[in-house]
Length: 273
Image 1: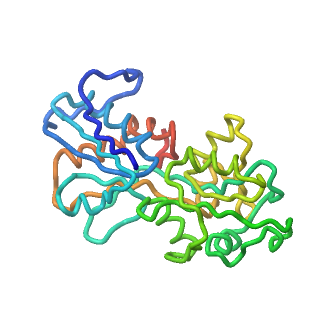
Image 2 (image 1 turned 30 degrees about the vertical axis):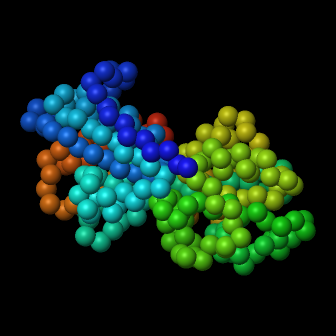
Image 3 (image 1 turned 90 degrees about the horizontal axis):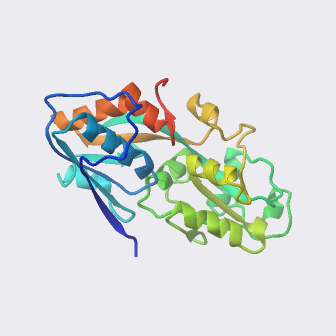
């Protein structure tokens, strides 16, 4: 069962004061933000910093791997949904970029891959590594749950929406995805996709996995930011189009130098720090 986290962020903040804070003296009230993906790692510190800059504001973060944040905004349950794709009828603001990394075991023979090959693997068109010039080993495809925004972006960019192979193993948490790639026997058989920021973190930590270049482009922050890396997704804040002062204030804070500096600790900011 996926845990449901409701984080009420108060005024006792263990946050560095070195960041310049944007203060909105007239900002007051309660704001609720919902999500279901890895973006909690930036939304939480953004909310802490926003509350510190605006003492009369109170933020709740509702994070549930099985939730539907966009529907929660539409129904009025929450003010902001954190996602990776725009939705008709809602206002969308991009606050960052994230690459989608293709993860394999360190012992995998593949040194690089093409975008078309990724699509063929995850749609089930290619089922053996030998079809890509490797060993006669069956490919273990690791997919993500249907409601996770990273899956939506992944399918859309590869042109395989609704066509990921039914033989795929579905895993929700990035940590478990990495453990499965590492622990699968034979080690070279598994392939997965995950947030590039998470993938780069585990690679730098010495976990025996690696991220494959796609179309000869390395999966790195600069190549994601300038669009050369072919698999990337925006980090979006979705809200109702009707003006809401606290919602607008939080969005502007996320786009401010202070907010973008926080975002840069995990994702790729859309503005220079």
